Amino acid sequence: MAERPSASRQKAYRRGHRGEWLAAAALMLKGYRILARRHRTRFGEIDLIARRGDLVVFVEVKARRSLMEAMEAIGHESERRIEAAADIWLSRQADYGRLSMRFDMVAVLPWRWPVHVENAFYGRN
Image 1 (cartoon, rainbow, N blue to C red):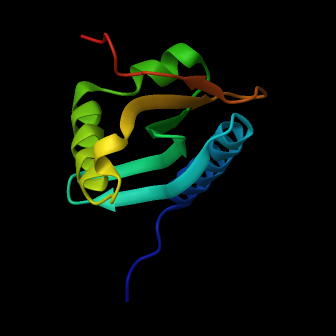
Image 2: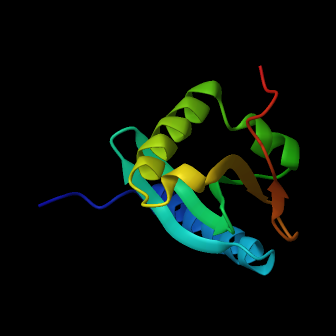
């Protein structure tokens, strides 16, 4: 019989689901349609995939105390993993040739509406 996850692990899982739900709500209010949540590939997981027109946005959701902490929580390895997973997802779309893509981040901060950061991977070294 499989062991149950620890209480702290369960709490983190619930917090992650709540953060992704809030992030999805914020994006929908901005006119995005949520195509997938927690999309898994062999390279890893994409928290949210959203679309507005011909733009597909791959979103990493981070629940942190500040926007700076959320931005710093996405390392270069995470970026590469998300980019590889996004390539797989895009290649399976019928309208692949006309889609633009972008990598965004939504920071879920205490007692604030989620902060949507467009092009979160752009210009980072």
